[in-house]
Length: 251
Image (cartoon, rainbow, N blue to C red; front, side):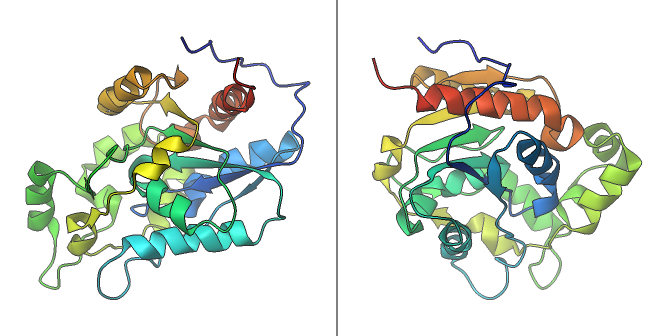
């Protein structure tokens, strides 16, 4: 049974550890900046690879995601403990990132994130949702920014602070429909990475349940899907608690 998350970190020994904060390609790296600032204040290093350009050109797109994150990892000192922290759609790319990374991944924290298939291909979007995306795409097959998929009221609920909302909206890319039509190749080796799950929203309850069934540490912090922007202090607490659990020696 997974142990409860320890939320107190004032005296934690961070050692040589770096968190690789991976944002969904649907939004921008600013969605992780508040957490990066909190981590810095606690003496924990982090890097945020910028995935906003991965939708340029023809498919496949998943190798660009993996290589961009790998390039970010390549800027880090060798020998650090390396933890992926992946949000939303970025969770699907963990197998590809593991294969491309220039050094071993010590653990992965899925934050309100999709989970790769344990074996076989992983579709980026389910068929039912693809039907809606086809309606949103323009004549060139380009989708509007992610926040334009929803009503202004929905976006305001997701991001209550107007300044924060404006910043998130301003940095979004416009992805091609083909990005969501791709399937990621099978890579069962990713299941060897110690993993944990942090759930915010009800929409990711099934993924959190799957993580529990796999025996992963799971934490729940009630909020909307971009809660790391709304309450970065609490989100940082939960992430560090899960990292602590993954770092404990096996009994």
